[in-house]
Image (cartoon, rainbow, N blue to C red; front, side, top):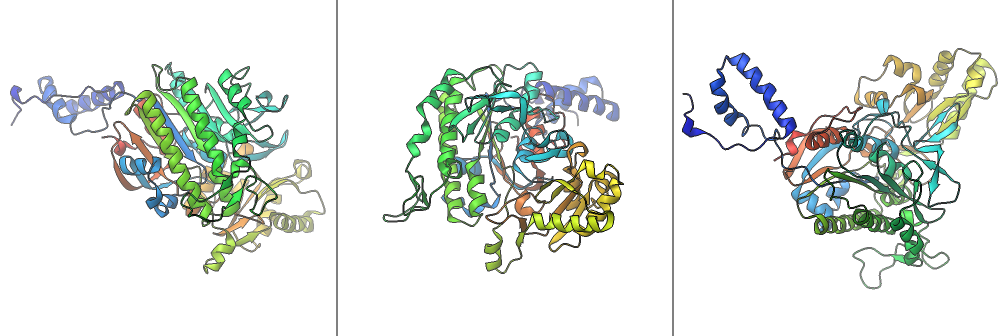
Length: 550
């Protein structure tokens, strides 16, 4: 029975993007159902309420995009009872994705951070690792840029930039759309500050251990702003000299984990980056940046990307089962809560969208795993490459075979293979590598170019990490729980302990709940782009997570 005029439904005002989507749907319905134009008002009344996510609230004033470096998903569940601040607020009031993964290999800092707000895999972004070998330059990092200078650090030191990243980020798309937006990245690490913020960012700030200053690059500006110079002049690191790192819930008389003073009875903590005090420096700096740059007070949506790096430094040294990891996770919860309270007080509650994830997980320390009767062990990268070199020498004669060897990523010496059949050299090298103990798979660049051995999730992850102009000749993937390295632990594999990370959206218009479906970190950027009504970043391979919208 047709609807009467008295049955009109009050409609929300759709966004520009929503109106376009709705228009297409209505036109198709008219064609398919041969409806008259007079039926459209009633049809619209039925369509809009039944399509949550096609319309949205006003855009947020600020997107706070948080990465906790080396924060496995299970840190949310293992320590849930200890979270009472920022993480607790996100878990209670945000949309939590329990089955979120990085879908690429290697799972390392630069790749995870470049994926976060670009949605691109390394095969498209060109960011294939923290560093890689280039025949014309040698080993380069993901953000090193000899054409720029460091500002605030050692005079004359080389700067950094996002120029090696081949794709756009969410911030770039906001800028290219002509939005009046400020985009700023902050971290201890240069790559973690630079890559999520993108090419057109107003600034990226990171911590320089040589000077204990916050620094940037001439890529962004010609001189330090007064507020940053003032922070450096105050030398905030000095307040941590001699401070002891105690557990947050330490009882009277408890022993500290370590001390920021060397030579005492307690172990020396080392650099501030490997303690929760490094994250405290970042949070304080973020508050000053919000205040000094008027973030959240521009006509367009501003973006602040913040990467808590100290968790990674501590995790590499101590492993995921150490009590210090629980402690630094709790302290991160408190710092995040402090920052969110500061933002709410400054720009008002309900004006900020928070998205949180991690750039990768981490493997258990092999010795700890062995005590639990679990597999695992340590591999010697030099011994592996020597064994492969011996096989090549036996086949082709003694030569200088490798130009670079970075924990299983092997680059053949271009001069050595110039007079040989390079593909045949790689085949022989791979054949030798596959005989090495605890090497699960070996990939050559020739096999990846042909797509061989990439049909299952592990092989597909390696293929998604393959960008030919920067990729090595040979990649050795260890068995689960086996790592390259003599001490501590690491990450990089396509196994769950390295790929499984949190994804949480929180803010006005975001539905609270838990989603158990499979999602990827690549989905964050297109989802935010849809929400902010800008073009999806150029290399994105993700999808819009429409279930987050109320």
